[in-house]
Image (cartoon, rainbow, N blue to C red):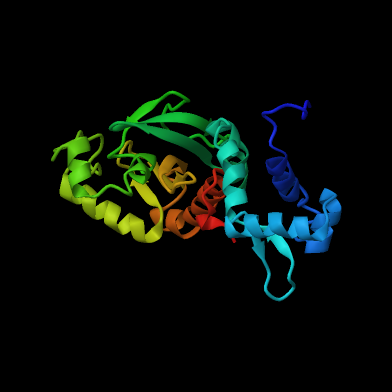
Length: 261
């Protein structure tokens, strides 16, 4: 790297070296350790460390006097991760969820009043509906569609879907705006949404939203099951927990630090 030019800022270089001194093995460092790792004298190292602490890139433990990376460093890293393909990032979590539950797992994005399937992992136990990557379904009658709607209040829902009646696919389909608003209000309390034979008789599913670094819903994932094998009570008592947990893991990988321990 050519550092002998008028564009290279040596002070910035030194500040970044301070951040680079931290690693998985050295997650916290004393001022002396930082100075040694960066080849700086103690007073110079203190000025860089103090500046980074004031800006939120470093945090100092008041008891041990040691420093560790702050939330702003995490956000920088997560911003880079956000450029990775969402499906590629989520795939191992969906696969693990499918193995844990022995059921089909899916991810969908919202496009207006429809969801688009972007990932699908299906074990041998197939549900009775022909779904594949690229399939489009209405938001009002699918668990992932409703998960995408969780942050929308009634006026926004009406602008998106109208007052209804919405298309009925089964006798269980929610077709009215007021019914949908009530269903979403209950779902917000649990952090998951249910599709109980609303799209197809014989199919149930539970979904949860995936949130990006700013807290916005970026995608939704679900587990879909045969209603002949899994009751709604079993779906909510067991599978919902696994789906919510997986959605939180993906959200964290996208930079949503709300779910960080």
